[in-house]
Image (cartoon, rainbow, N blue to C red; front, side):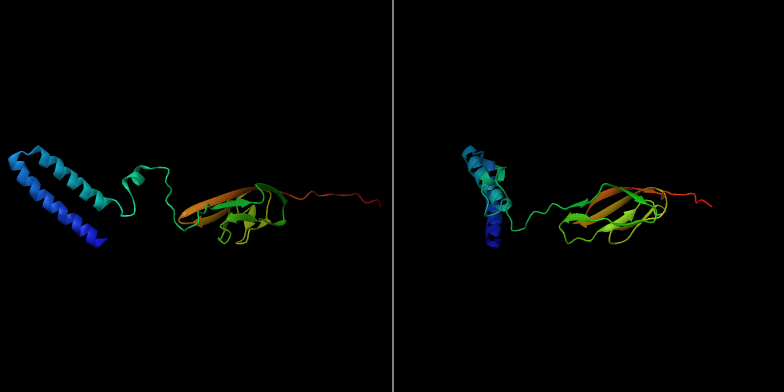
Length: 161
């Protein structure tokens, strides 16, 4: 490959010298020949040796490599939950690739607390959003679950005396 490039550069230099000589004589046929040689040399410098000029403009040709295409994603098992204050629930996530670390967040830790494994603990009445995030090649992929926490119903029964 290096020899090919050096040869092409050498050919360009020779063509430039011939072109300057032809320029003085105003030879049209010489212009055509030199232009063709220069175009060929530039083509050899720019285009990889295993690609043809047709391949450059063929949008249907696929560039293949041995790597598998991965479409990262994360999906929580619920998009919304209703919990009672004091409840604990394990939120699960399906993701691709499946060996990623998940970062869990709650937007209101006074209402719902979430640990590193997706375990939710309902603290107080109110609403919160739990966020699960994976990072893949510098991009974040996320899914959310809306959580409504209610207070337990109090059932008072009157005792007869």
